[in-house]
Image (cartoon, rainbow, N blue to C red; front, side):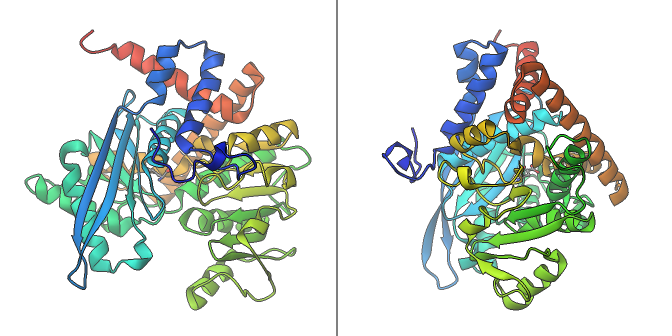
Length: 435
Ligand code: GLU
């Protein structure tokens, strides 16, 4: 059953905004066809193993009581503890969290990181909460999750609108409730002084940058051979988009457009992401950047460019705007930014899509490095972290490319084939309790 507010995909002529969980079922089915998996296996791979729904009371600063909905969905732990971020957003709903948890399972499997998949969400607008309210809500959520999370059970991390400070509160609350055990491995994306990994904040953007660089330099994107002079438009300038922009800019790419929720800016000569960041810090918005033209968020996606990088939310690229997109390739730094209909349109037009479960996997890969450092009581240099990340991204990209050639299919379907094969093998080898 869906609790999605935007199930308008069924209405004739309506915006193509499919239910994200139904999208995961389609993606799994497509790969399962190639792997000739039975109906029961498909059901098993689509359905999450556990769903936790919470109603959480928080006393607000004015003394009033407010209720918040919280979710944690544990999709699959065949290959290791459940792993995945925690999202704070007013539109968070159960089917979205279920989809995001499924994408984590496949992402960890594509990267061969020994984790399963999970995701959490709290329906709230953090911009409207004070720091105290945010802390109360986070600590209440952690307490309610109880033993459903833990360093070997389920390990949250940052996602949309959550950050290292929120991870620190989860870590502290969990530790206090577990006999003051210093359970550093219960969350990743922690502040560095509390056991966070160097390089974690930039890791998702860096991972995407590395895959794109490799795809360009190996001649896999028609008509382009390096980042130098390549025109890139980026939707989303949060933690992921901003780090990606800086790395691509430093490598000689031209960031010709950037958008945030309030709108975007374009310049054919290229935007300096460091200056854009300083402008946002000074003025509180991206608009009216010196030398650039203001546009809407929707217009950003239609700007002429070589590479389009969605780094915000789901369903941004759909049946309506996909045919008008002129980029030669897409790098999905968001989770689920492209609807299946848009995907079809790109496939017909020969536009390469580097899929989310590969392109944005740098974050969880360095989360894994953080977790390993926590257990070995070690601290790796940033150089070491980045080198290990580069190795894993490159290895996974090669595996996905090879599989795409073998099955004569898209990179997205190939990534699912790689991931599903690994998860199914793990499940078969473990067997099914009680056997
Ligand atoms: N939220 C990130 C993602 O969607 C990172 C998850 C993690 O590090 O566990 O991949």
